Image 1 (cartoon, rainbow, N blue to C red):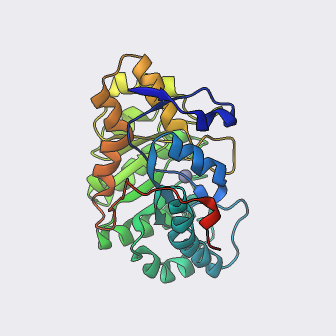
Image 2 (tube, helix red, strand yellow; image 1 turned 120 degrees about the vertical axis):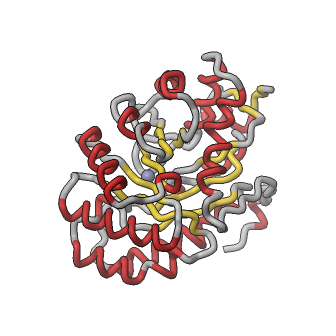
Image 3 (cartoon, protein in one colour; image 1 turned 90 degrees about the vertical axis):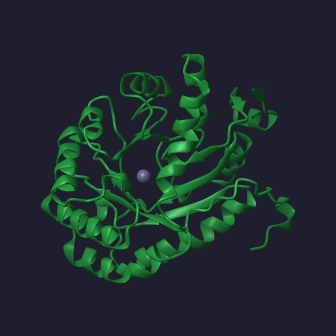
Length: 297
Ligand SMILES: [Zn+2]
């Protein structure tokens, strides 16, 4: 079932390409190039979800958030389609910019129309960056907004003090009495997985070339914790990251003896089940890439 695709060779990749349809459930395409879209399509990725994130410098105006939400919900969706990938987005004030309560309140007051957008499939990512009281305030406020709308929620665990942050996230989710089946706790490691798996939340894992997890570590985690409610992502952004992380996970797990059903659960079925909790999630896996000469500005 594995063929080599010559379209990947120019990237210097000697990747095996699977015929499996892959959903990239967490990726920041705003920061990626058209080359990335072409490589993703060639590698079998047919749909993706772009959570709202930090743009590289903190925003100073609520309006800058609103323009960004519209950009990822509308322009990025059109751009992605040109390359044969169905693109959805999620909307939120991310944890890294959640330490200014005045600005957070202003953004939350105007965020409704973007959460209602037909390409918005969840609220996120929210959670912790430095685990401050202000971040927690914005996190809880946004949990309530999502719960009132019965939307899926993407929760970001912090890079620093990840275990403490994950424990606090779980405490809050439990205390608020939320529907855990609508929540994904993302960016887990071997250390946080026992905490996240003790809930009914979905558990995300992020594969990066240097930091975060490797495909081998994902393979090992799945052997330890199983594949139910587990979702893998590449989360590619401005940093050293890889929009083809999921393809490498498939390749590694096949070599590591996991069955096809387990692998498909990780890169397709579980993302489908999670996002299907939003009525807006109606992915089209048969979009044909356009001839670049036909792109309109
Ligand atoms: Zn992210």
